Image 1 (cartoon, rainbow, N blue to C red):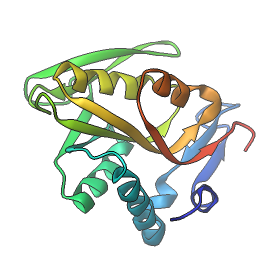
Image 2 (image 1 turned 30 degrees about the horizontal axis):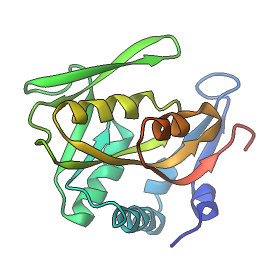
Image 3 (image 1 turned 90 degrees about the vertical axis):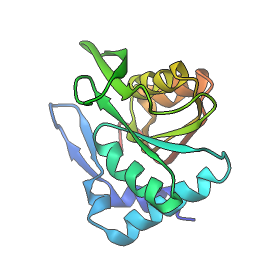
Image 4 (image 1 turned 45 degrees about the vertical axis):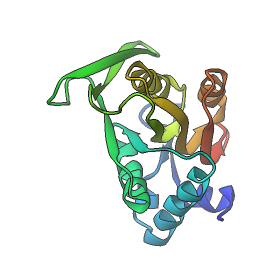
Length: 180
């Protein structure tokens, strides 16, 4: 298994983007390195053995790359959690708070069946709002969210704690503090 430091060195930090004072954690560098990307998917696959699940779900949009690769690797169904208004079939929606306002995510009404175990994947955990909203959607359909997985945990923003407090298992490849 690769260490968190291995992955931290892969990700690029863009200072003061999209505005001054923000350290943007750029995951595209992982996708540019086929060995590191493959290792990341392997680590997620190994971790997923600890909590059996039936469906990989991924959050719009960067989560799709990770979730799609993981679903392919594990031969599992893949479900998209999209921003409101982007799915073509009948959907259910869940709103969540942003720093200045609200947003919503949706899944198709047939995204899972009652009793299906779901792993939700995203690129990073910040405040946890999107992942909590996604978890609520699957729970509304009777699914059991066995955990959430992300490449990066932005610890100081409190999202991983919020997710754990909601009873969700959380796994990330690495974590960053604001000063890093």
